[in-house]
Amino acid sequence: MFRTQYIVIQHDGLWKIKFEGKHYGWYHTQRDAVREAIKAAHSAGVGGGRAPRVLVQSTINDQKFYIEWTYGEDPYPPLHS
Image 1 (tube, rainbow, N blue to C red):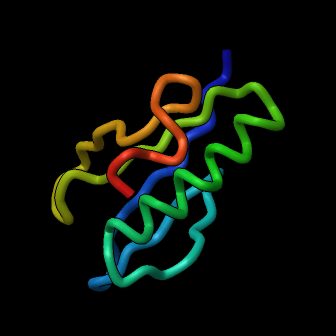
Image 2: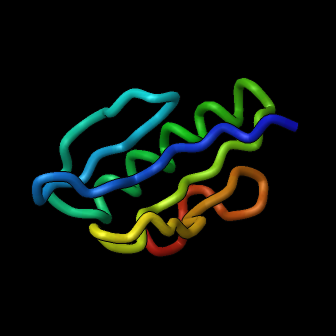
């Protein structure tokens, strides 16, 4: 199954969401960006069965990412939002 990814990254002190090679939004906090990415991923999962997930950059200078939320595996809305 193809897995759609919404990636939350930090750039110039703000947070944005990268999806299919394009950047969306400018958020002042990582939490706000993650919340919006999860909303978008959930909507995509409901309509497409692509099991989207949200990844978050671990630090500014690091290219490592961790999985924050996965459609069908994590509750929606997230318990910590």
